[in-house]
Image 1 (cartoon, rainbow, N blue to C red):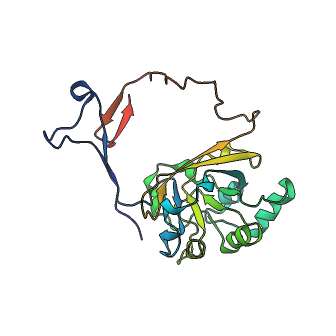
Image 2: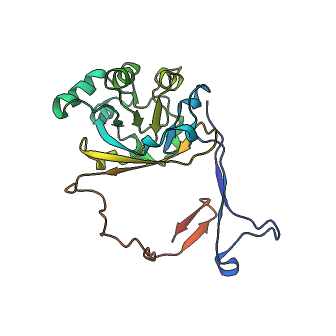
Image 3: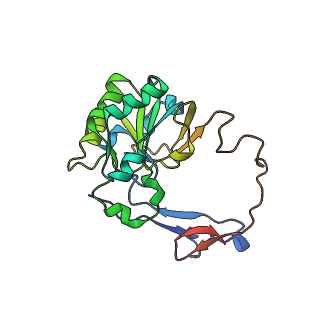
Length: 248
């Protein structure tokens, strides 16, 4: 199972057949040829596997800001690349931090994303995941909003049993989350942004952790110029080889 690669191009003026450029047109735009809504960091609504449940545009607005829990398992993944989060891992986390809050978002840290953008990652059949029992415990016992993981699938079983159970039963999940080594295991909120593509079975998403004031990573309001934004040190230019705009 897989999807064709997505491609990006400078937007073409339909009247002239030439791409828009800053020098002549005063602006530039990008044409996105997306082969799927299942790409990169994303939010999976249950309609991805079951049309009787909400699509990406039908998710409630209450998803916007939620308590964040990060459960680490990167040490076990370092020993076994196919390690899957267990119920015991969750209980061990709770012994240290207390019971997982109802309605929270739970991200599972495996450090799998540290190898991005290595294309070989997509060919691996063994990768860190979340066991079906752990998913059922999180939803049926702790009543979380949704969980998130770093790989692009929930588990490495032949039938994707965890993902199938989640989405066929009305649950949502996040995939391709990153930078979990820079987020506290507890005490943060997560903001969730995604496009409301009508009837979308997936959504490119951005997750931002709002951490305690004394947290060692991140940027606080007032630390960087915001309005107007500061000019960059290098000009944004289209890179034909990479197929995206880069600063160089």
